[in-house]
Length: 336
Image (tube, rainbow, N blue to C red; front, top):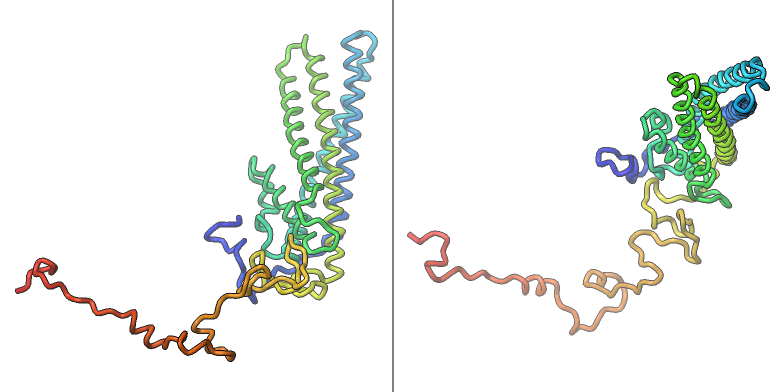
């Protein structure tokens, strides 16, 4: 992480050091990920529909048991269970492919704007597998990916992107609601027969909510993947990575914010009439520094003779002889 004293990530990289390269085009991975996410959304919506059917049958059964055919209850249960099985398979495939795309996109973003992220690109893989922190770290990586992809692009926001926040909020809500639905289903194993129908209806309701949130999370993930993939494809075509042919003159790699090449806007700044000063030059609002002794060597009018002090006199005037102590008590050790 940034700020670690034993890691050079987040600190200015020595000038001339190799910058990250474009790992791979995210076009193919992005399309495949979008297709799988669309299948996830479709399966979740279909499973939610079967659960709504089952919920309706259970409500009718609670009101009038004779009005519901037991075969219909079994059919709705089987349809929802089979659809959830396909949803699980598609979700596992999506996880693998999405992490591959996520790593490639984050690495490419590092090549566009090096050393600007909060977390190292390796967290795009490892961050998913840490308990509890797996609900936070990938979001930070997703924000870094969005920022690195959009930074320096005309007409593109330089922040973390609203689509990133909305997608991750829906993703976290899906996991929380999924855990709640799993807990409801687990309680059915120990339910008394008299409460089995009402508790099953509660579990079906929790499943409908979780799957509905899952559809929203999948659709927002599609929007995020499509946005990043489209912009990175455009940057790769234009050669708009660090030091690439499609990038303007840039400050040295890893240079801190606030400095840069005159005329080249740094992140978060608007170009002024005179560009941006290099380190060591006075800002436009600062008056020039008064002349010093060293500046007299520069060709130009010399100050009046009476104002000039020879350097040798200045140096010797500051040197004073130290008078030794006169009283015996002032010595560190008595004289012999």
